[in-house]
Length: 332
Image (cartoon, rainbow, N blue to C red; front, top):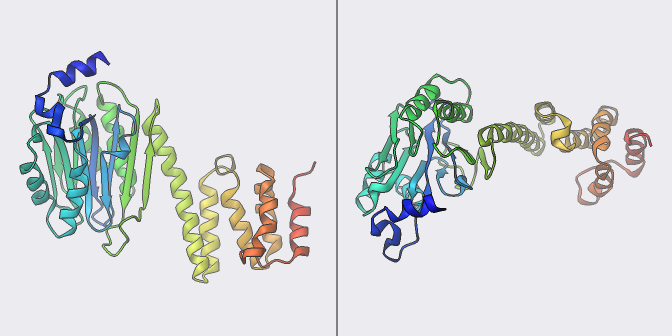
């Protein structure tokens, strides 16, 4: 607390008092904004030694762009930056306009990328060293309050060399930052957002929107959450296929989802709905092994099974449900 107080007292009065504006939050951190040139996905990822970094630093909107606003952070760079890019303003022009209007721009670190991959970054002269950024084709990496000046170049190299989708490549950049020295204070929270590059997507739609608020190993926790999110995304694909009447495709998606996670991590959820889909199609024999796996973890799934026909989510009659429960319930 004393260190933080000394730091704040050393800043210009305008930064602390803000002339009646909301006080600044010291979200010193490292981050990446990027666009996948093939899929069009837009993303932002961040790690910091500060609680709940995901609530303030990363911003993204489908078909528009992404923003990372950090150092002595002003969240309005996120909302205003996305608004400007949504009107067709390029990321460099949007960032330049916001910086011109900000009397405290010297304490900001901000990066923006639009859906066309145009990118811009700013590291103010009053950022706590080591601080800097690298912009490249389809990305920007930026960091402040780092242990050394190797952090952001390491992020750029890792992102450019990494394989996989945008989420995987951004995580590789965060890993590289930590390996190069990371935040001099340590680590606490992390976040990752990926949105579609399709401007027709609704503003709140997310491919991934993940946060680790408080952890001794936030990047490891974020990677685990990404794995869980991928499984549930596959399950959602299955639901969409069912709605479209593409049952074989739905079952493939459900199977892929269930295979991505060990049963202990899913509490039976993924295999249960795969079983329900099969039972609803009259394929009870195929459904039984999946029901057994779900019931073995929690017999509450049995109670739920009886409720589904009431709301049209299962067409099986009571004798079929009796059989499922009898043959799939764990032995007592």
